[in-house]
Length: 385
Image 1 (cartoon, rainbow, N blue to C red):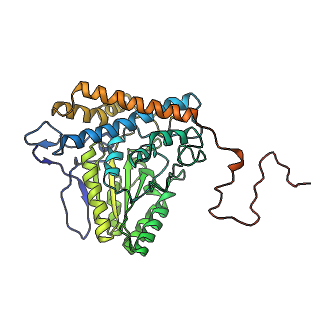
Image 2: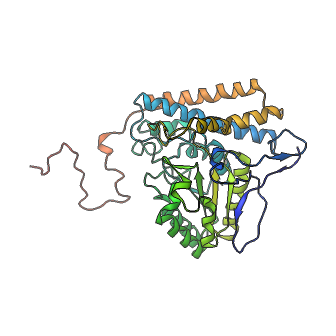
Image 3: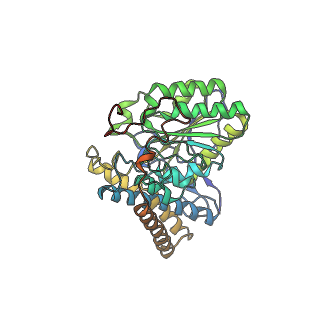
């Protein structure tokens, strides 16, 4: 297939410009809904990139897996099988898969609380992720973390963090450790658009820029910080431009385009690896539902809801692959049935897994033993007789 021409918006103060695959997002209002300029293609169906068909189908399957997982998680929440807070990646599947494809297994990932899809794309099984959501001992955090605190040292997923921006300084610290030890790993740290307004974001980018740390900061801009639009909360709503304050190369890319995200992320990651330079990547990616599973998103108008349906990255990719003759309708149905069966098995595994033993409640309070550590349960007497 012929090469696809896609342009990405970028800010690179005192650095050379480059071309990247990505729909140019002309403004923050339209971009998070998945809009942007039309893509031009020579010799193939509109919108289909010049990649091997097997690669594209693989991306589609990963996106489908995340979609079906999140739909099942939403259902399990209504069934009271998942407690606490639960934030879904519905609508962000192309961004998730594109970012994770750019990483090596040895690279580190720090996320916020909307991280189920990232865990799956990082190679953690659906069974272990679902079991963690159910609070079971077979989960990635042994049932103690839940939806917002997935952690797997072997996969180098170093958290889900419930505090907005809590992961950003830690990612900078991990990148400092990599740099100090002379390793070739890269740290990727993703966050929502609201995080760019807090002090820890700017402090971390400043340190990363001063010390040349191998970290890629990724802002997932879905246009809303909970229910507040980016335009109403950010004096500069084109968030990638904030890298200019730290002389950091940055780019905005269409987050509904898995290949655009992958190519932009690859450039950022390999630059960080080869030159030990930080990077700021912004993806404009819709959030199809509310902020969390209990948010009905009444702040959206009927027109906005219709626009979101049109921006669905999974439906978009399915149509493009079908029009290109890469994936037939029957093959899509087969993949859907295969993925649905995998998610059903994950839910059954979580259902059948045991809850953590109460005796393990304090096992992970500290990394090493602490003298005088209090291990009293709520019903225990304050003083022993």
